[in-house]
Image (tube, rainbow, N blue to C red):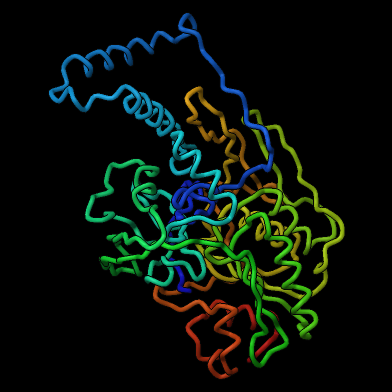
Length: 421
């Protein structure tokens, strides 16, 4: 799996299943969800309560209906949806707060089940353009050469400029076995390259965690790729297997982890801390709610280092921030994505919904995540072309091959732990 470049979006962490990271398409779910089963009830505003400024909207609506040259394309539903999305875009939370059509809502529910059809990548927005947050390990996107940070300029030859993210994601989605061609711009330092990348869509099943001993050391690499419903169970199994194999230290790899469920962020973080906060949550009035560590973690004392980069988002940032706040582990790599808005779903009467950022997450000790991210203790910048070592690759490597690998972030983490392959 290869590394991404530095960029940042306001995020959802729309997964393209596209796999979704939980995402749209990939789509939706890569955002942190509170795990609450109930949806907020929609707020209905009666006509007598409409603000005076709303008259301008109706004036514009009437002009479009009466005067637009191509009357056949006028669709009241699409005009309404476009107006809602425009209103949400004006909030400045693009890529996170979002409007979902009934079809997109159904796709989201399917994605959160953990399996779906698509290319297997999370997608967000940067400067108004769709951007790959991270391809999932072993996904069609990763196999085809898609990188974190790739800017999607066209899908099957259709320009993405000015298009809504959901629309782009739905174009990328499709049945397993079919092909989609992504046109991408890839920034690597001062160089910009363009690529046409054909991808055969597949059935995506996102693994939460895997592990391997790092050859020539007593350290184990545990790769946590997503915070889905199985994340804590898979992580515990990996930790226990590494312990049984004789690991005396851990490298926890959160690179290109787009996040997931809040409950899993709390459970996973609690495996490494004895007490304190996992995170804090602030509402619009500044009220703070603390989410406490759950007792019974199985890796509260083993020395560890954590790998992060610009593809580490939402739940991954909560975990990294908590470990850093309490001095539990040194963070190695690059500043994370900068997700922090809590999305609350508000269903609308036709089956569509608004996913609205109503609160924001802070780190365990109160540092802001939104648009800032978590900075590493040891910064190691990698080229977008550098190969990030996976657990599967490590199982086939010699200590010398590890030493000579391009994954300088992993090598720095080993140095931090006093391990030398």
